[in-house]
Image (cartoon, rainbow, N blue to C red; front, side):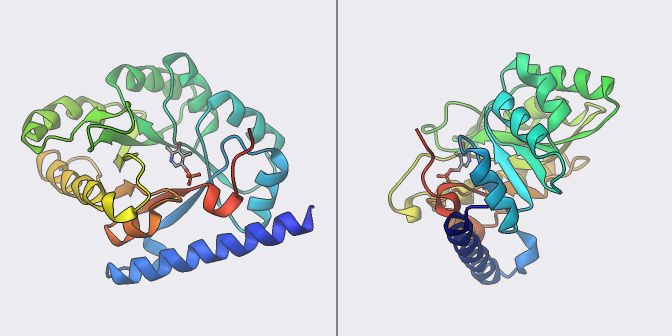
Length: 241
Ligand SMILES: *Cc1c(COP(=O)(O)O)cnc(C)c1O
């Protein structure tokens, strides 16, 4: 183990946990209400190992193939792997085979493919629906930036709650990047309002999780109700390449 690498990751991981606990308390919650997904995409195995050694228990990856390689190399580690990036239809099998949760379910077509692979594997996959609440930034996600469209969005999302091997648990968003996290805050608030809206319209499903906030803005996201934050560079340092 590379000791300087490990100690800097350990320090930043502990710092992030402290920031999350403080922000959770400002939002009237305990530290356990928020889970930290350490985003290891594009990071080499030496960095991923150090993250695990530093205490990370959930790792987030964006590319199914890259992740599958890491998962098989680290299969003795007691970590959960979450898929947080856009999944192409032909990668649905890899996702069903390798991940504990999908944060970025963004189409009915992908859901149908995942359902088929999960049924074959006899497993249930917890999923978050990715929504675009900004109208800019990510080009992925169900369109939800105009609140006047929400009454039509609810029936459009309803079929996603009906797949026997997919379990909707909440929402995820990736807002545009701002230097000032205060500018991102309205999008986090909108995601939370959308969660309340969908919970009222589609009460048979579970809408409890909100995956929002990255290195740039995870503290504001927790203050606004995040239950998952996805933090890479602030803990692991810049991605290589
Ligand atoms: C890369 C990525 C993150 C983490 O970004 P950092 O700037 O490294 O914290 C979070 N969510 C998604 C969807 C990502 O692609």
